[in-house]
Image 1 (cartoon, helix red, strand yellow):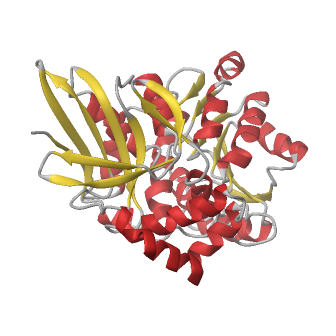
Image 2 (cartoon, helix red, strand yellow):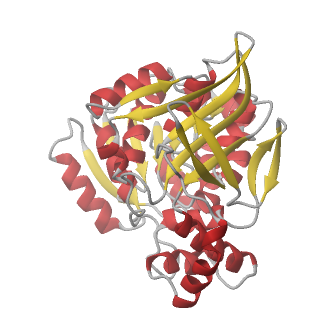
Length: 395
């Protein structure tokens, strides 16, 4: 297959494309980016080791005709262009029109809902599309499915990822596309979108919208206890559809109390219109003194993560008629989680392997838990990242 790597010169795109270049189903690789020089550098670096031809091209996903032309010549597209609440839906629509199989790392819940509504069109076009195959969503969804499978009935289901605890650093800058007028990382702009306004969560088995940064106290197997905070991500949207928790479901940030307080200040200013997503993202890099003081004044309202693991899924329900909680986490993953590009790009590349060989579900638009074989994925992840394994803990 000929693979088009949209945003392939960005931090996550480069990693995902490196993994994809070695996949058996790829016979030609095109690195596409709005920054042609960056695409050429990435293609040249990949070509040194890739077993297939690699070339670069310029594609701006906001240029509809150019995007259509690039997709028309490809069998599959790996889309790592963010933020997805701006670009994801249009790229998937174009892929369906050109009958191009599709995989992305979409981490915004709003376009995920909209893209899932394209399922009928994708099936009619014979297009297989997998949404959100990164770390969170992606690995988190597969961990959630693993945890839920250990229960007879499912009540609550949470996924969680680290902000400033454990091995994870600040998000890297994305090279494709930078937001108009500046070099603010797309990942940071996405984050500001998802800590403001309202976000999707599940309550009493129903998908609802609530303000983010709400505390969730967890008591998990192994004596792991602490508080994490809600954030907008696709997991509640897709896990609600597939696994049907009867109680609550949310995606959570594992974050120190002081950082949560500062994010709450940014949320307040975003909701009041005093900040744009870009300005708030820039503020994360250089916190304003007045916001730092406001955060310090409210820090006591927030509780810390305690002994929660940095990246996990937790399911509660019943087994054999008794209440039970199951924790699924990655063991030996400190090195992987320490690099957001690796933690997101490697799973994307491994998920792409299943898309290319036709095992990632039938035609249609699917979340990871509905399309990706979790057992195979985690075996592949262990080979790609030696020492990484799924650890399931139960009472």
